[in-house]
Amino acid sequence: MSAEQHDLEKMKKAKIPTRRAKMLMVNPADFMYLFTKGLEFRKHTKLIAGIPDDAELIAVAAEPVRHAIMLVVKSSTYEPIPIDQMPPIELIEIQTGRIGATKKKPAPRKKR
Image (cartoon, rainbow, N blue to C red; front, side, top):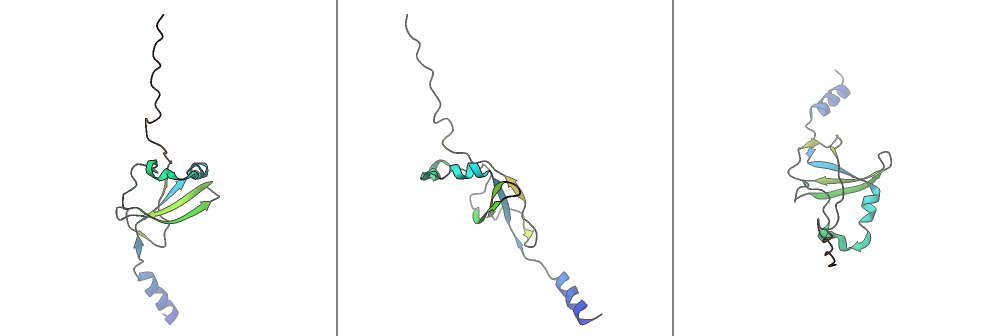
């Protein structure tokens, strides 16, 4: 076995570091809607139920092939994956406002 082959075998056996991350895929139109009113949206906007409270944004990128915006987030609750592998992709929807805040009340009946 040559020295180069020996080094290659050593590299293959080396433990690959892991990270706990996911890629969240967002519709670009929904993403741009967030910026129509400045940054006021933060109080009443949640991307999706189930995103851990300790989730931290790592990167944001446009994904032209999928026609989406990709948000890479990390959390201690995600499964560890090797850094040389793509994190799992999860499709999310942006929910704005308060649920039921604009619910219309029934109009009062007119007396005859």
